[in-house]
Length: 424
Image 1 (cartoon, rainbow, N blue to C red):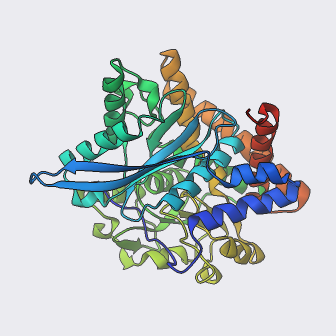
Image 2 (cartoon, rainbow, N blue to C red):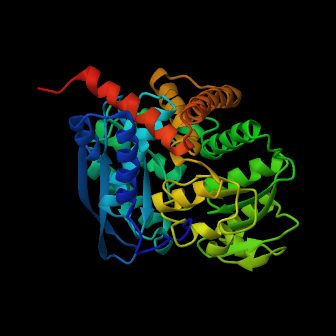
């Protein structure tokens, strides 16, 4: 497993600072009442757990783990689990909040959740990762479930880890419960089309925007920061649509070729050698340089706070599609907007993953299996509808896509809170 990028400016705002600022700006625009604003500023539920693991050498290590449910107003909580050495409770709260807006903007009946373990999985064996995953699952099992909170893959987690979570939860209940997680292998209840759904949804939004601004994708240049599952699949799909992928990066560094990289071959290199830097037909560059490449489209698909006020003035892309959660700070947003760069916000651009997770959950509950074509067709329908709503509001109000997406999402969540009322 590889990590997907750098942490950005260590002195900049935290992910939670950014999430709250974005929410409050949208709340101001729609005149959200103070009581609802207060409710949405704090997570509904947080859980902090210790995760003791017997290591291969017989010693015991104890890892910190978190699970946060931001809102349950529109349905069960939904959100991924990440394994990363810099996971914090505040970061997980921010990610859970973003998940609430993401689910609302694509109009699926979920609230937001997120989880994580403070660990560098590259330093663990497969057996140690499995034991850690299973113990973490047992610790958070008091709040997860197919009707309560449904985890999914995130940074440094994958279908195998979802399998262990599902199996652990099922063993504790005494029967198989496939719908407790999404992002599982198809053989045990996963959905076709889930593995590349985040990337596919991102590419759909890029194509939707290109059609609105009369940009021909054929021949456009692309840079991708973070060549994990999301970044690599987005690069491959954009290349298939005629784009020229000229720069990509991962935690080890970046590569560049003005003639274009073979996106799928780069992905094969990562699988075989562990990093894009081992790809032979390219020049080396840094993660930071990938962000400021002279390209038409930039896909930051790493971690939060990658583009800040420090490097935003040097970003040259005309379109930024946020494959990661929170890669731009609010200050960077302002700088880029003033320079004419169009940002497709994370809560829209990378919502394809949670949308197909919803499809997987529905299939699991109904014990049905959709075809890959059904999944892709329904994903495109929902992503196109969400983009149309966001772009339409932005054009009507003369604002940017992020503001429009947040307003739409916040209105939907606030309406659900109003309709449900306050208990008791």
